[in-house]
Image (cartoon, rainbow, N blue to C red; front, side, top):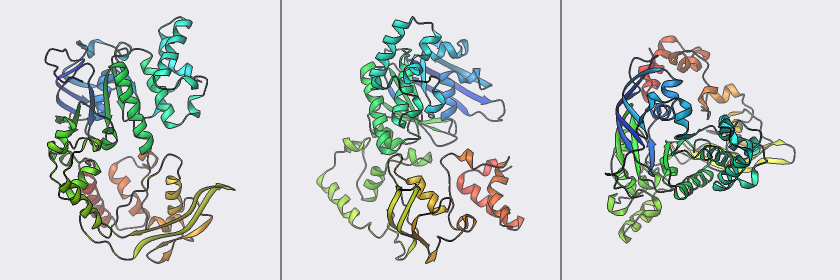
Length: 440
């Protein structure tokens, strides 16, 4: 898009905008000044607790109509103060695609779900059918109109929810963490769908995410970074990659940028580092990368050597939920102390199952798992929990206590650790995880 917007009215405009939930003493959003113009493709980025979700709720009307609090300043959508609108009117301008697509389905079939907004508007059946078909075709779901939404793949579900928003001809498409539940390959396809929609419709696109590297599979106009409820940057991706803003906000920069830095390449705007596909490296830089890669076989990216003996060893591991339907087949793996290992694969590849086998939640069919030379196969879940900590995808499934301190202390109390030692350990862990302010 042409970024010369000096003569264009913004479609979204925050002026000295702050919001504080009634249950909190401090504002979640503070002094937000932001203009997003028609046809722009913008990314809103920030760590957990930065205010991203609250910003989304302000844009789609859940604030102030569902979540109550104190508003200061102004938020206008298409020149109209949002406080004078209701959710219904605002939904005709800003269409939201939720992170949890299942929570957005209301129809028994794809066609019914896409038609939902039109039914509410009492659109005549023939016109409705035509609009549904057009919206479905736009996202490649025209052959699935009679399918149940819950029988679709993750990517197809997302396409369906996008069509359900598009059918209402909104001006702004707001994607709330659209990649959260998608594997890397599906995430790339999702971003390509969003990019294709932008080209076809010219609509304003706002993507709220924390997976920046996956978002930058496509080109965007700007990345807006939030931290502690404030905007700390509003930059083009090329400019963002040469700054220390991501690190300062507690966000991981794209891995290819980290690799360039470790290899000694000067990451400047001139090499176009905003996207991996736009990189323009000199031959000298390419040689640096090759040389650096050759030295990382036995060390981490920071150059520190790993131990020679594996801390965890998996040999000939097999598992199946049903007979003759293997999920894990002949898995062999060694992990050394200090290594940071990523296990990746598409949805259904067996990643979660492998984690369950390691923790003892399910029993392997055959094979051995060894920790520091000690066989884990016959150990109980409780015994393995002394060695392996497991963090679920959905943290709500793990939280059992009413306050943060008791939640962190739970495992230690179950092990009968003295209370003074628990207090010391909880404080230490809370500091590492940024939870110190929430202990009291």
